[in-house]
View 1 (tube, one colour):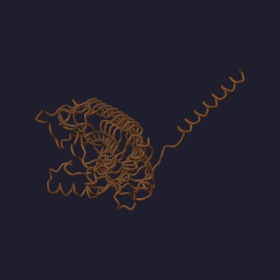
View 2 (tube, one colour):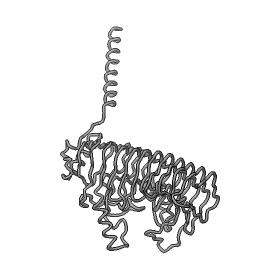
View 3 (cartoon, helix red, strand yellow):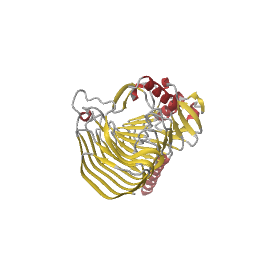
View 4 (cartoon, rainbow, N blue to C red):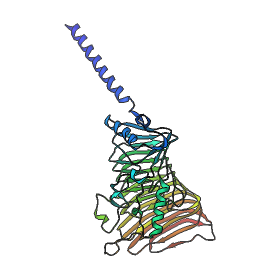
Length: 421
């Protein structure tokens, strides 16, 4: 009897070990990878591959997830939509090339410039409400930029009142309501509009991106962080003919009342980045309600392009709060300003109401060295309260005979160990 019990116990232990081994092996097994060529994609820069690449995404989604792989080649495509559990990796010498035909970007209702725009252009790559997303690799996302830039310039030449959204232009990359995401290693080129737009995302790591558009490419911001929190941007190179990193939100006199669409942009950390061409390495606004708890450190601005370390746009039709902005350990070498603060009235619409109030407080800039064009300008519009600005340990050489700073309406202004040689 005891022998039978002992044998039974041994069998139970063996079965338990077999089951445990199965689940450990299953957990350790790599997620599926699917090369887009295996779904029919052709990397000849001519064949339109939208349906084949989307097929790869959808196929992995149905099988529980995995990674869509873009191999060496130039794969022409229209708008693509990632899905939960499906990551994207673009290999070195692999290019996702955006179509120059607007018909390849079917219109959707989407967030852009501080509001939901009906029937507007999606991005080349889109991700909605995805957790643990990874978009990685050493390859390139290349928009169809030139044709869209030309269309915008042509229309604005015919009608100077033309606005950004009057011309259908795709972004390179758009993430909405995504959480715990990583975007790493890629080159972003030739975006028709903003390069990389994040809306209502949290806990996103953006690292080692190389984002470039040439001078004269309109509205091609590098990274737009819109109503997001806990965003880390590190090790990136950005050279674009607009804002390099723009911290955004809603716009209009009632924007602060809409807490669903217009979340604060907060806890954004920028480190070890290099900036070249741009309106601002870090820009607050123009459309924004609350931007706070922002740090920029250990970054470089390299010339000869013009740029500003910290640019603050006070939008005159929108109530705004900018607070706790810290910039430190910055090396500048070129035609740069340290700070710029001014009113922003482009596309102004107060709905017949008086200009709303604005608050800009607790701005710290320290440990800056190199050469500059000007120290900067602080010229706030009416109804703006400025307080607690601090400049310390700044030692720069001007490119011209002087590098003055113009300061209006500033309270509690601290300067310590600042020299302009």
